[in-house]
Length: 255
Ligand code: MN
Image 1: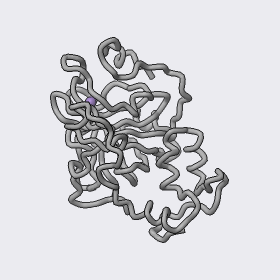
Image 2: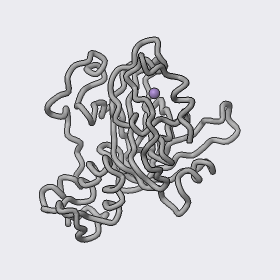
Image 3: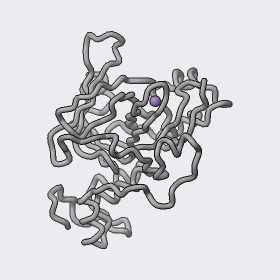
Image 4: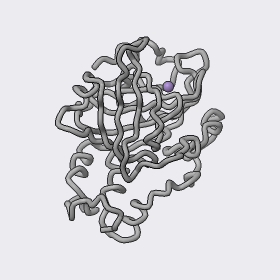
């Protein structure tokens, strides 16, 4: 995977965006994922999956939706460096993508199926499961053949327990990193000490209330920082000591 286009478009003396380092191991069956809300010439969401040592990236004008009926257009854009995932801040006006960038969601994902993620992208049909702070469940990115530029995809929520009808992406417009709104980021205001809103995730609350163990859902919230921890987390539930306990149950009953 090449980051040449990413580098070519940017002047790292002028933008606070990270310069690629290309030193991280290349995961192909899962890893970290990030979604940024980017108020550039047009407001859009940038959806990024860690695959093959870079962030495979799509610009989604309407944002991802938990509603399976909403198949939103996603333009595949150039690969971004892994360090870009955590980026939040302001790209100077006049630079490529000038405007404010919010870290809107983050977490980890697993590729569904035997075939690795890069092969699924090459085939134009990528299936994965997200474990994020706002986005969860099974998803697909599907390439639309015979369109204009050849970078036209759809991002689709599959029907499962994380699916929600009439879900509004704009009702979640705060940063998972700093709790700030887009306007607060644009004005360079400091991070909020308290997140603006708590994500109503019943599964996470169950775990916190009912177990001394880190359940898989809450474990994954911080495992995204470390691919090694992510591999451990995939095996099941974790005690805070790091040893595995009972396998994660997907039902709503606590464990
Ligand atoms: Mn963007």
